[in-house]
Image (cartoon, rainbow, N blue to C red; front, side):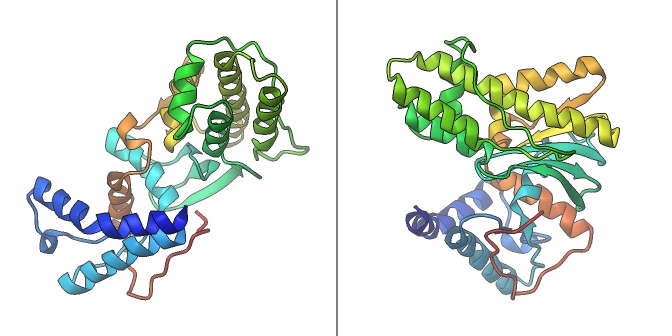
Length: 285
């Protein structure tokens, strides 16, 4: 509910920012830059953060450096792993995005493949809602799947040609239909089967991307990278000589630290914005 989200942002932003400064024992004037997210996302929520950041930057005469939310998820890995340096492949998987990203430098990216419909996190949430687990769906599906067996065959979408794109609407619909036709179906088995199938779908294209780019380093990013089964399966690639990086669990879902990390690299690259910077809900990487 975008309207309610925006109103809650307005109510929370000042006290959250003040509490962060108190815990860090710093003042605004000590900051090198103010680095707000300006997209992608819900436009109302983005405008609250961006407007607050502009006011801070103007009042304290501090540079304003806009951050792409997706870049923030990538940059979460730099907090956990200070030795990680581009180039590498990043598997971006969240509620709003699913992409295979060629990270060329700290501030330059090339999207090699993306979802054509539902993001993987969106599919997790919808499956969770249908089977009665509630929201947020990802952690609850992950937990219930541990009690079940991946013994239900579910569809995978394949595209013609050499595309690395994904589609998760088919498997989401299949799970919904199965549950509707058989309400007594074993929900743990259904969650385990769904989780296994979407992980295989992701990994098939990631392996193709590794072969095409000859990059031997991959990083996971986004809320779904906290999924325990997903993390375990991706770590198996290390047996094939692929180095796998995963952010700390607390850095997988949306957080301010990852945006600050991305903002740092943008700032060091000389990127600056003026007060005309606007929120872009469908901002591309």
